[in-house]
Length: 298
Ligand code: AMP
Image (cartoon, rainbow, N blue to C red; front, side, top):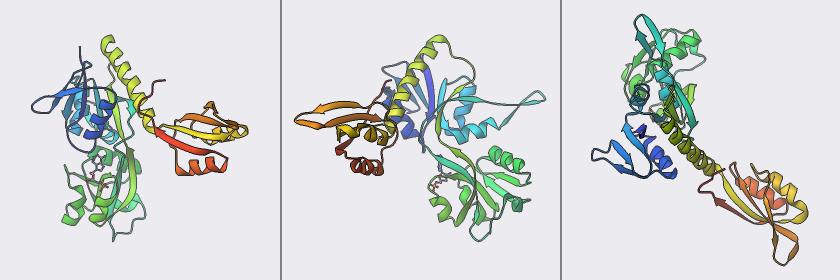
């Protein structure tokens, strides 16, 4: 019995997916063709696949889990499958949002066009690699458009005269800028997520998945968390605790040779910004140290 996880072979999510699984303590031996990673220390293997094949592999039972962008899952879930006369929709269950691969699927058009609303696009040609999500968006808006599917380089379609406008993924916005396009509307926000088909796993695989999820939660929480150490006046402990993001009960320790000051140690489960440190200093804290947290197990 081995659990199989599909991840992106190359692209924006691949290194971060591998890094996350490594942080969960999984070690792999890569096959010669590099498309299969055999789990050395746990019976969990990786299949390195094209992003948009991952939902298919999950629903086909080839893999038990998959890490893929929410945009890909949405696009796939909108693809009708004809089962005899009936059109059905696929669905996967999202187990965890993984906090990387942030992007948005946006409607964009040439800078010289003044965009007022989606209705003005009635009858126009839209190029995209996400035809199902795009059609669904315009259908919901009650606007008729002609959707042209392109596998890549969508941003050059208006310049080439293939389409009037585009629907494409935007991360920093620099690709749109370089192609003299403006982002007009966000159709969906996306991040990488861990998915599972809706069918249940056998009890052995489920136990392994539970163990992996426990580690994953620890890594994801540790990523946000910081260990904060500081010195504080004894009578300001509550005020200082209130300023520590995501802390309920800090550890308070005596300070050698000081009656009126103590050491306060706490794990902040939310991001700690410079503004937090400045407020702590104003409230009487000193010697403030912020340290990364590597692993966490509740
Ligand atoms: P950017 O210039 O950073 O806005 O990135 C835009 C380009 O990168 C477009 O060609 C997108 O198709 C692609 N892109 C941006 N974010 C992602 C993502 N999370 N996954 C896959 N492709 C992306």
